[in-house]
Length: 432
Image 1 (cartoon, one colour):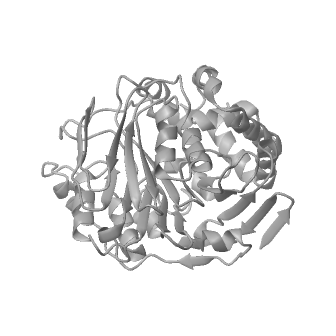
Image 2: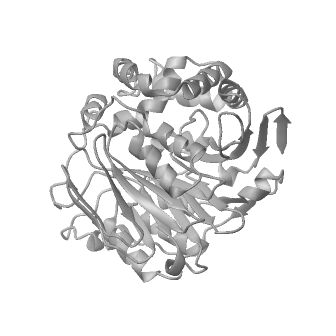
């Protein structure tokens, strides 16, 4: 079903297995775009934001509103006016306090920042003592091309492992920002109702973006731009890999994040290890290695591949074994092996040098449908929505549901052995 008016179109899947994911095409002014999304998805946005921020909610850490006010007072100075206008429109359309919208968009910064996360959570992030090289990270990111893939084209994967209990995955959106005076490119964000930043996305120039949190260095700061807005800028204003990397280099960054940018047209990719001071770049085939407060981080190089994630040893072994065979089915299998019990979203893209970018996106079940932490409910085990970007932009509303292949993923015990954890211990975040 399609709902449409000027500068705004919603393509509804109306499919429970896909969490009723909607594709939203936006072509208006920032505040207009925000208002249209807020009004169209008012109910799920209100439910999520009230769960996050309403004082009556029994969520012990999210009611600490003074922390959010303190952080936004600083970081809000660095957010561009067009994003502030879009957040303003979102608040109006959804009929929620503007402060709540601001706070939601700095939540990734707060939860990654070691000092503020300790203020927010009862149990601060701790170094796991049984293995010296365990690093504080989440999510998995992969880019592969040329000899690494079955068809020689560029394939990417992003697994989002983050706070599944928030239940944001109940209302997933694909936000398509089309050409306007504010948008140099068409950019596509894989997001959720109520969030306008980019945590994973792509554009019509053949670029894709994926993020991963990691480490807790003494360089973390709140005095900068939240990464979802930098990422969105990189897709909006860049036509090639060099331009996207330059935006991250020039921007005022905050906390320790991994950013993976792939360019299907040039068949190149860069993995950026970035904090507020320094940004290290790694290309295809290079070993990713860094030493921060939580210990060494190493992902051995594989030809025409670049990758990072929670399970470094696991990722190396499963990618090396599939070198030259990577396609959609193999990426879906890798997604299952790499997933944690917080696997909220899985995004696979195929970006050919010529022709249309293809997308497969899956989201976890809501927390009330399947027991939390069980394999059946996490994103990589669920059906994917598949579409071609060019078809979508040309007006097609034909969408496809794709089931992952039959596959027995690695067990927690197998992951534990591969990660070098002593016998009798299970590696953190393994699926039960």
